[in-house]
Image (cartoon, rainbow, N blue to C red; front, side):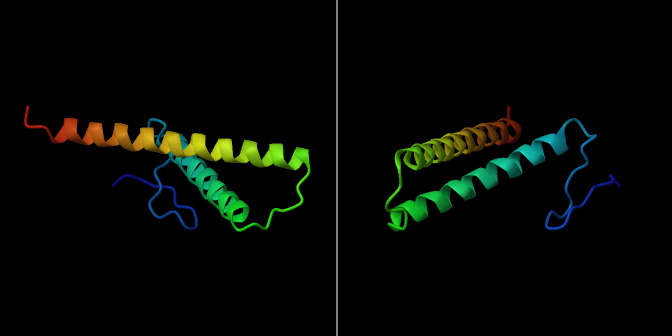
Length: 93
């Protein structure tokens, strides 16, 4: 049986010592948090609760939305690569 490190809310998380799996998992969770934060930012902006922002706050909003769009783009690329990898493994060749 392979030992695993488990953190609260993360059942069966792989250990960091096994070929960078822990590093990837941390990066993936960080990416998920970035997407969640971006979605919350978009929801707040769309609801109209951000009226009266000064120019600095508007630039910060723009930067936050840009970070969100980059995170979503990266998730899309990861999903595409994972799907390609699965197709390669499952391929009858």
